[in-house]
Structure formats: structure tokens, C-alpha cells
Image (cartoon, rainbow, N blue to C red; front, side, top):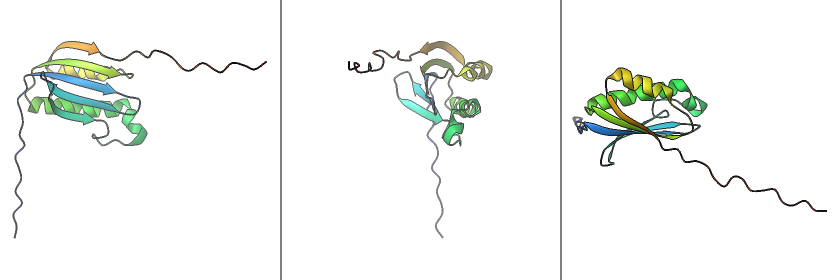
Length: 126
């Protein structure tokens, strides 16, 4: 009989980290990176077990944040800065980070502002 050998998870210690929140109409992606920019772990509402239109619900975001907080404690994150990109404002994120005990140094909004607008309608023939 062949024995199944499980590999141990290699967990990197990241005391200073950056949390990127990429919020879109259909999904929200949370990426935890070191200060160098190396992504340590990533969670989305889809990976939390939600499908289709349920991924955009606030409850799915709350579950994804809970999974990310457990990963942060695994990586021993103490100091965190947050960068938010996108249209939906994850308000639950701020309250859950305050309750977790992780020190949040800064919160930045890096959403691009749309410019140029739509194409003008054609000229009317007379």
C-alpha cells in the first residue's frame, strides 16, 4: 500500500503587510502582500464558496474578510495598511479590522476617476 505524504504548509511571517481590496460589481478580491509587493495570500468571495450574483452580496464579503483575517493571524501580521480600489465601499472591512486587534496605519482610496465620457451622438440630418 502506498502511503499518502502530506506536505507541510510554508507560512511566511509578515509583520508589516498591505491589504489590497479590489471591489467590483460582481466580486471582491482581497490580496495580502508584503511591503515589497510579494502577494502572500489571496481570497475572493468566489473562493469563499459563493456563486453567481451571491458573490456581490455584503454577506459574501463578510465571509471573505473572516477567511482573510484567519490567514493574517497565520502570517503573524501586526501592522497593516489598506488600499481600496473599486466602486463598492466595503464598510464591514473597517469594523472587522478594528475588532481583530491588528494595527491599521493607513487607508487609501486608489479608485480611478472616469474621464472622457461616452461618445457623442451623430449629427442629425436636415
